[in-house]
Length: 469
Image (cartoon, rainbow, N blue to C red; front, side, top):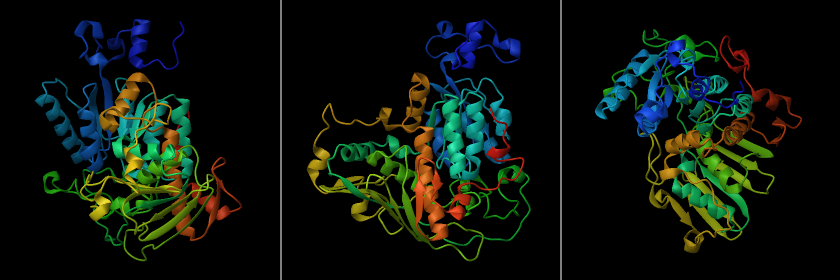
């Protein structure tokens, strides 16, 4: 019997006539019996990571989709996974849906459940690549928070493995689904501002500090696994995430790991992966990267937190444009061309409580040097970019899973935007100009810079220690 390689588990069971109960899982009743709202028509999703972004953005984004069921939640903090179950079960109970969410402490065990169709990964940055690769190898579709990976080597592996396994992918670059960002990029791509010569990107910066005082690891946290492939380190209150009552803001507080280079590269990837993605979209450089980059930054000299503070980066692209990233620019993306400019930002929208608050003219979501740049409608023969349904990034992912057509972002697009930010980080660390080959993904004649394209990985974690398939 020939079974298509992209056949889903449910399709396989129906195709072969095997009952799901024969392998120890509940029977999936065909849609023709229960109608359009049958459980077999729903996409079963596993949420990995139930902290600030998972609980505040990704879980709500999944729960509002009628065609999905959030059937399992996973976190290394047992208090957070219990809170997530309460949240999800409460949502379904309120909507008269009979569903009890399964909880896990180890995503690897959760992925073994054959009823899981897709995963949403909302973990710290150093825990992005491994679960994404594992999910792709096990035939699950994937949504992962940005940035895609900690290193360029990891990002390349993720993109290649997702593509090889024919998985639907979406990264949490939700600006791709925002109307103003699409419109800005369409106007730039269709020449409304002439030839683009400069793109200015404004990002926030992080403070130094953080307590280095070692304290006992909370009993509810699997700290050994939380560290993962990173070096062994003592537990402090400012290294991981806040402990305490979720009702008193412990989930809203920006976690300490975002300010430590072992787990995050700082704002250059934290916010940079959002805005560089938009710059690439507008310049039509989504599948390449800069050819030269030079950066400088201030790095903390004391305290626990090690990510960069104030910074300035200039990246040259083969199309002749220069992308300038600076902490003093207004938060957003400004495309400058021979015939005018367009500035796009989130406006007053804030995804988390720590997001910067735009002020004055910079608070306007979409601006241009001349009104007609934005007011002139696109012609039928002009470039029309991906338009997410209802400007909803999670719905865009769900739609892609249903149609098996690409979502707003692919793994390769995500890798290229993240890698451009990682190149900026390397240039800031070295403080000098670097020449980059975006096809080979190597620096020209610079062994020191090339050594920073990957990191040592502590066993048994890290993509180098994963079973390959």
